[in-house]
Image 1 (cartoon, rainbow, N blue to C red):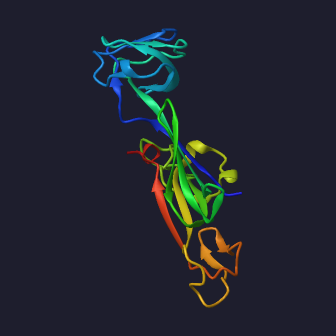
Image 2: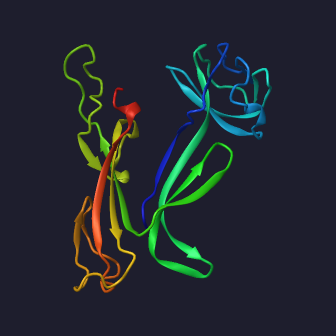
Image 3: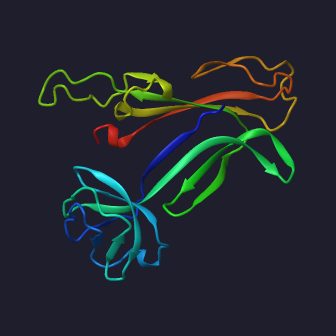
Length: 227
């Protein structure tokens, strides 16, 4: 089974509250409605956060004056500089494109994007034979200075998802791809094992004579890198 990568966070469309919300409140106040949230459907997933914490809730309505009603009361209190933003998420996975009853011979990289209300699925990269994710874990702590005992925010080891003991210590993701040519019979020899970030890769079909190449990239998780 091919792995998937799920990434979730807040949208860049954010508003700062105009008054500090307290735990148990079912309304939030803003200075007007500049982002036109009054036009949003009901039950939009949103994120409220400040420098001390965050939580996800669903809004039922927003007035043009900037009063947002919540489906359920907040669990925590927040400062007057807290921001609210729609929750978004993206799931990356491999699948084979279908055109009617015809299924493509090679798989593609797809993304399922959720904007807080509804999800859409789009094909990003065709002809991806395989994908793999390794997670960079910070295992070392600072040994001196005012932050002694705190994480260094540097990757010390890359492991697969099932070997991550503490996801709060993940500071980067290393992604490996095996890309494959659309055409068959590009190479004269049978398809051999090639090297990629997971070690040796042997194609499931070793007789199609497609050209395959390995690529990789590493992405830092900015809010885990001390920036």
